[in-house]
Length: 363
Ligand SMILES: Cc1ncc(C[n+]2csc(CCOP(=O)(O)OP(=O)(O)O)c2C)c(N)n1
Ligand SMILES: [Mg+2]
Image (cartoon, rainbow, N blue to C red; front, side, top):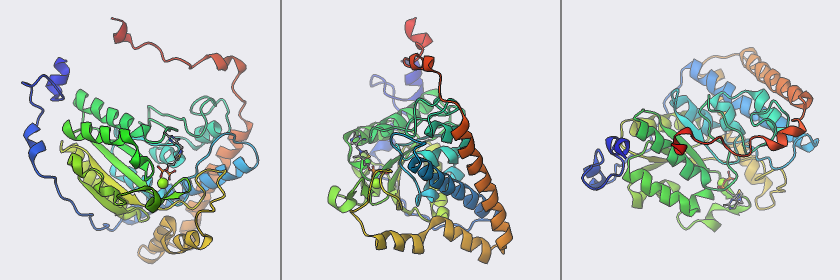
């Protein structure tokens, strides 16, 4: 309790949360920042990191079709600029948590392609020893907290990560990613309330890819401007072009600065699009091929950077091919590894079921 009071969270009335009066202030107004120009190095990094996610996901789709991957598998193809742009704004120690469309987030945090692919194929070198699969991988080292199949669960868990940061007095920011469909879940608003009241350092990144399974945003949401979803909780929000990695990075910089300086949570609604079905078993009959084609042709996040590298940064075809080759090699190696790694031993059925007791709890 003393630590709680010291950190300014809660208390019994006499302990004032730092900036408690601030809550009375009117909501801070932000407008989406203009996308800043990237240096050549930044564009190369964005290109490489987005391409790695795309090629990895294409390979995962193939392996799924060949029967190497069982269970659910939700691909992130089309949405790559969101995680890559956000990651470019973050620093060591900042945490990431997301739902089940999570392979891109893992790769963006620097988790190993081999470990992710081996988990997808249920092999012992996977991040969860082959026992978790697509939706259940974690890396404490890379500050990646899952991977969650319950729609919206990551929002309250992510708020908890931010609570821990505040409690410990560090300056880390938690980034909680969730979809337009998840944004209608009740626990999201309970989390918003607590996060705003206690000024927790959490960025709610709503990945609005226009559909929740087969239901379009307009059919499911009374308020389709998700950046406004925090208004009653005094959480500022902006809409961002989630297909332009520079726009994402600019918005990420703004939100991180907001959180790190103790102003509380912020919402970034990323306007994005998924090219593939909801999961591998979705025939996607709720939208036309033309709609998907149009997005691919006019807004593809990787193609935008590719063009810029050639036109604004004088990159040659050979320069880009070298990056393509590096990425293909990483993915081919991961796929090879994931098909040859042994399955977990049968004895593993009995391990990792319960967490070890928290030492302090028994005292
Ligand atoms: C609590 C809960 N309700 C329903 C489901 C089934 N379900 C899985 S994904 C999904 C749609 C979520 O869509 P969205 O949040 O937009 O994310 P996207 O798949 O578009 O990335 C639903 C309803 C679930 N997994 N958990
Ligand atoms: Mg969605």
